[in-house]
Image 1 (cartoon, helix red, strand yellow):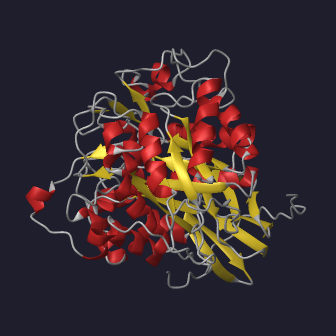
Image 2 (tube, helix red, strand yellow):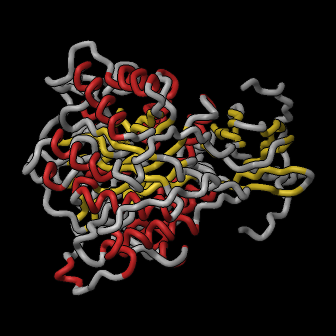
Image 3 (cartoon, helix red, strand yellow):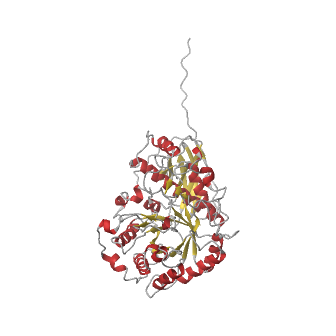
Length: 555
């Protein structure tokens, strides 16, 4: 999309305009993973109380749904309702040789799905050769082979969309480290001192199990993650990206790298070291995750306005009834993920809930349905457009009939459906009691049966909701983060935000037309496009020093 000519006024001014009143990781209650279990967010299992511990019983639609996999067709007006997807992970066979990719695409086509969520960036490394991160170091990867390029071409030839799935903050596993000298753990790992980018606990420890995570509040780490995402849409004809592990690790007590604490103190004005449960500290960390989502979304949209921006989002335990209840969930207070805000402010085009529940473990079937319902309560953006929704189900935790029932209930509720995963399509495959081909056949039989969600294969032809946005940056300030940015039209503030740690700000749901952007005594005139994101030039911010008058001279 071509930009209109820039019309700029870069002038110091007094900002006196009044501001109007303002406005998982994954499987709950999952059994312990076998030795070869995947460690990516759409497949990771967060331990929760068992049904025996909760003493609850399963009732209603969730109880009967497992026995009734029939699926009525959803209204086509509901965004995302026609999506039928499959996650293709990279923790085993499926993507690493030309023969594996051909088989994967053939199996997906036979199953009848219309979208593949293909693991591209796994642990700060890629199942591809043209990203800004190094390729995976895996003896099973065919030399010179580009899995993302191959699967995208073959899936497109069969009418399927390809969404490149990337782990954003999950960057290493000490059991299977990447051996490339270019991997970020070499220069920014645990022993890199001030150059370390890892999330840390108060005692300085950095491992969650065997996994290492980047801290989104470290500016250089956020920049690295952003450029990794952008490199995928710049170099591959994928239909979009999906953000996974876009959060802090489980447990709440993360974010204690000295650099992060120094930033927090500078921006908040609060001295000392905050407790993990400090609401102000939690809110600040949550904003760092949201800032990263915003930056990735707007940078990608600036490159390709029609790319889908998706996230695999956390649904721990039972669902809330409303937004107030959501702000008490582990999703919000533990891993600092505020996906309702991402939807409502236009940062996501598609939210795929990691709604990983087991109908056979009461009351998880009811939890599953309530999360689907809650997501629809927060589906509408501030500009009135609705974000696409799909329910991601844990095929690997359930029998095929339960997968079919959960898919049916999702579609009947007006959501699309995505299954995790191609490599582990049943609980028996995940538990190593059945091989993958047998599991795929079993799942295919129930999902393609008369009345089931894949009985009549159809393409997903929907395009993302319209993004009309601006992305800019302030430079020259000692503390670039936390500065107020206003968007003004006809002498009225129509949007307001704060800059992130690198000085970036952005908006995704503006109305098209001329606007003025004001921040820290600077302003810029430009035009919001009909579709896409305008990248504004950097605004240089200088601190104005007051020079006292000279004392009177003696006569």
